[in-house]
Figure 1 (cartoon, one colour):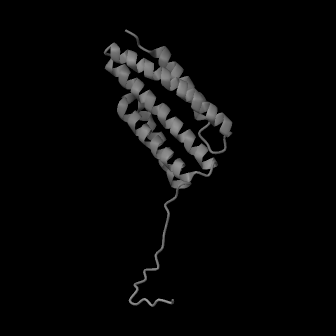
Figure 2 (cartoon, one colour):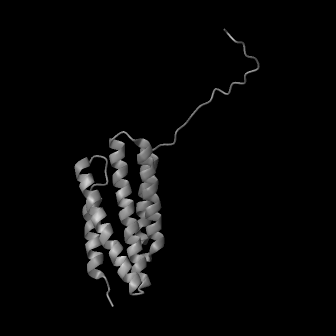
Figure 3 (cartoon, rainbow, N blue to C red):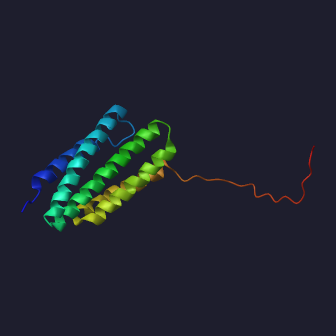
Length: 150
């Protein structure tokens, strides 16, 4: 039976190496490279998950499902920063929501990801600071009579 410790080490090293690019001030080219690295790791993690499922190792399959969710969260956050730099706030917002959902999914997938509660709080703080609530004021007028000027 495979304990997958080597695979988990590979995953952790990849995540740690790419986390440093989760900031708007990082170079966009480096962030795109990080996305590619995460994509390659995602392919490996998916294969490991399929192996664990085939071996009927539910715990490891759930662990790798959580790993896939972490990769998805990191990719979404990287894309968010890239979209913000490209002046596409709507797409950036969608990516932030994707990152929040993927983080939540990772926490639910396996108890090994319970430490991501702190990351979920960080994402909420990013939402609060980068995407503040919009305040709109209406004049509150009621029109009792209209007159055509033509």
